[in-house]
Length: 221
Ligand SMILES: [Zn+2]
Image (cartoon, rainbow, N blue to C red; front, side):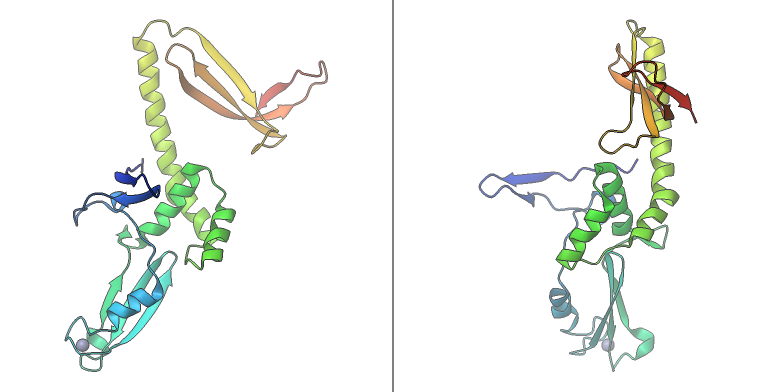
């Protein structure tokens, strides 16, 4: 599971986060602090001199891939074959910018709306992935990883219940047609009282059986 922690020190006077430690160059992408960098600040660095031959004032080009920017220097002395290229993010599987994947991961695990997130970035003028790319990452990488993690966690809980006493009591409840849910489908969750953990859930189709006002039945899809 792609879970990470960045240890930061709180400045109590401003309530802002300031990283209090340096990070090794070989630290995994997920554990590295990330920054918002402005176009003008990048230009100021790459316009100074060619990173290959040190000639002054090279032509600088920028191309974005979601949240990543690729900067190229076109230098007259070096020519087109030797132009310097720099990427703002490491690549995952040699192809996908790590920031794009982490943005998708952070969105789905925090429960915020991707539409509002993208609108926020639009208002900021922050380059980001499209909605379509988010769903591609979701199906291709995130859902399989989350399901794998859940299955492993569930197996661990089963062993915990089997090995311990006072785990005979269970609770179950269904939820649908409330905030974030629909009237047709809902989730039914089983909770083990002994361990205090959610052990299983199913997505269910809800059928209202007008026997009692407050009663409902749940039919497996
Ligand atoms: Zn050069």
